[in-house]
Amino acid sequence: MELLSFFKRYRIFGITLLVLSIVIILTFYNILKVEQPLPIYQPANVNTELVDSTIQHQRKYHRIADFNLMNQNGKTVTMDDYKNKIYVADFFFTTCQTICPIMTDNMYKIQQELLADQDVLLLSHSVTPEIDSVAQLKRYALEKDVNDAKWNLVTGDKKQIYELARKSYLAVKDQGDGGPFDMIHTENFMLIDKEQQIRGFYDGTNPEEIDRLLDDIKILKASYKD
Image: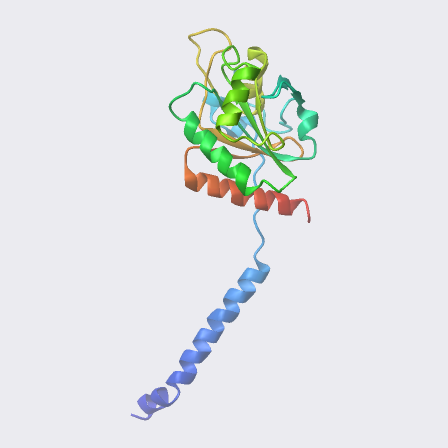
């Protein structure tokens, strides 16, 4: 009886102490919590279907190769335009009626979310450059409200785009039945850091993955402040 009386007498005090302890623990957790750095992807740890066979066993030092392509305004775009920038890349084509419209809408969402952030750019490569001329890309860009200062849609030599897809971005499947440089583009969005390294792959058709990508951009940006 005395023990029961003791618990009744100090019940409110005990509950208050428990709540206060939980608040203190959560506060310290949030203060001390350190974001895990994003991985650096290498050809050896990416789906082999997306990687050129010549580099499938490479385990370090992978970077996006330089390129020379033409954007929707007829301007030459190279890696110099992305120097010291974080950027999101994908592969698409303007006449695609399946996943491309969804991917473009989600890339537009990223554009709008980061419109004022000069550290982050976007880059979309056409996998059908024989169809996607500069004029065609311009029409598409106007239709999709592409901000020219933020987002390049690029076309150019098909062999170069194929090699970028398979040997640099590790993002596109080899079609293998329509010519040496035919591709089956995927829904992949790639997050590229300021050292031209791949830091993440995301399903460009999935809104939750777009949110994850935006969160990862924040983590990546914060890593340059440390």
